[in-house]
Amino acid sequence: MSSDDSAIEFRNPKSDNSGCLTGCLVFLGVCVAFTLIPLLAFLVVAPTFGVLFNETARSITGGATAAMAVSGWLICYAGGAAIGALVLWHRRLGKWLRVTAGVVAGVLALTAISYLPSRDWDPVELVSGVGGAAFLVGAHWGLLAGAITLALAWLAAKLRKEPDHGRAMATLLGVAVAVAATSLVVAVVRV
Image (tube, rainbow, N blue to C red; front, side):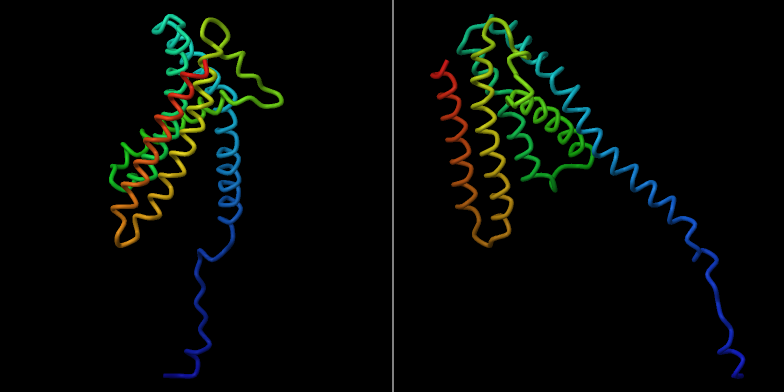
């Protein structure tokens, strides 16, 4: 081996940084898209589905207050329960079923959030008409129960790693069912 072999320098032709700018621009575009898509979904899709769900509930129930409260509760509780189910069983679902369930859960959750009042938004605009107030009462209680169910699902997913998790899972399931039933009864009684 000659001493000239150590002086040979190998250069990788792909080592220049020309792809760095492209990668940074793609990353920036993805960040902007992930910021704008949920914002547009919240501003456009959620109110549209909110009106659609309310009108459908009104046409099915005839605007009866108890039935409208149950309809509002069910629509808002379904979002939290669907996301909670995805948290618990996402590894057992196939890729396309997971994506489909995630889209449905996201639309339900966005619609449920659109029933929350804020400084600049009054959900009465979505549900004006016969049974609208009862629908909102049910929706608010459904949001509360859905949020608690989602928190319990997250806790159950964390407890699943424990060696003796069967009893804890059964207890959390019982608490989730009790919270859902209690919030539904309170929503119907409050109207």
